[in-house]
Structure formats: C-alpha cells, structure tokens
Length: 229
Image 1 (tube, rainbow, N blue to C red):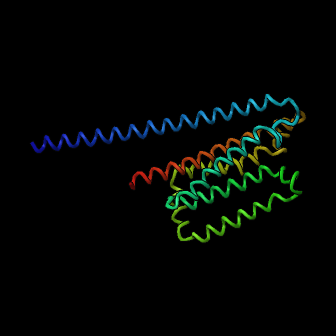
Image 2: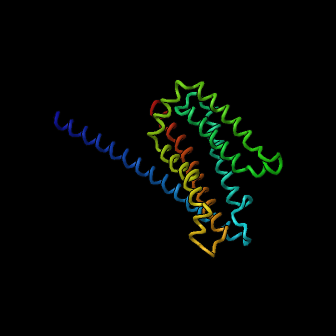
Image 3: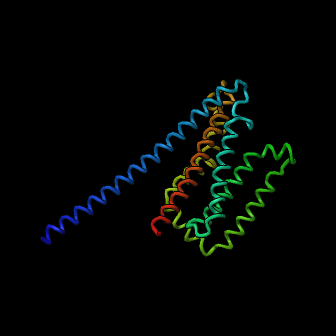
C-alpha cells in the first residue's frame, strides 16, 4: 500500500512538473512570436519609409525612421521612469533609473537638430550633463544597493537584450554606417541615401531591442514578486 501511495505521489509530481514546463515553453514561444512580429513590423516600416521619399535625402533627420527612433526611446524611458518612481521596493530600482537616464540622453542626442535650430548651436549637451549629474548623484547615494542589483541584472534575460541593443546602437551602426565603407562597396556609384539607410535602420533595430530590454526587466521583477508573494 505504501509503495502504491509513493508511486502515485511521484506520478503527481511528474505531472505537475510536466505541466509547469509546458507552460514555460508556451509562454516563451508566445513572447518570441510577439517580438518577431514587432521586428517584422519594424522592417516593413523601414521599407515603407524608403518608398515614401524619392529625393536624395532619404532617412534624413526629418524622416519617419528618425521619428520612430525617438518614439522608441521615449517609450522605453517613460516605462523605466514610471516604474522607478512608483515601485519603492522594485528589485531593480536603480537599474530602472540608469535605463531612464540612458534613454533620456539618447533621446536628446537624437533631437540635437531641434536644439541647434530653436535654442542655439552646441546647446544640446547641456541637458545631457544635467541628466548625468542627477543620475550619477542618485546612483552614488544608493551605492550600497547598486552592486547587488547589477550582479542580479547581468544574469537576467533583460541584460542579454540590453547588451545586444547597446552594441548595435553605439558600436555596429556607427561602424556599418561609415562613409568610407559604403564608398568602398558602391565605388563610383556611391549614393548617400544607401549609407543613411544602413546606419539609421540598424540604429532603429537597436532601439527596438532596447525597448525589449526594458520590457524584460519589468517582466523579471513581476516574476520575482509573484514568487515572493
């Protein structure tokens, strides 16, 4: 009788584990499909923008791709900041502050032409330095917690997205969009719009993954909160 009961208990545990594993796989598959749909939509958006403008100034500072970059930065920054100010016990509170600061700085840099046109030449770095100062002060103030947060964060899925995003935005897009590279590729048929398209579209792709990193950070916290409760 005891052996029968023990066997039944093992079967119940195995069944429960199997259900849990299936649930995890299905959730991850759904998340993958959502991200894939957003990537596909972004690529289609780039194609639409390319066909919209028939001038030689495609993907300029006033293109929809540029506006989309700023939109993604704004959304990622707002999500980070809202969770930073509203969740006092957030597991990644200081990481959210760093995210919001990074998005704000990148957004200002993307909009530098408006600072140049409406405020004054060379004025855009001023708000950047202010943000760096404020965020730096807050991070130093929370220095006892920041290291443990970073140590947890680098093990998360969000960090993988963040690494890919920042390397794409700040390293690869710059190198891939170099004029000398595209002059070597197209030689005497060099066309600046192709160079602009390569750089700006890769950059937009990176900003999309930066938004994914923020989303994954929020999901990670909600999972931890559910386990604790």
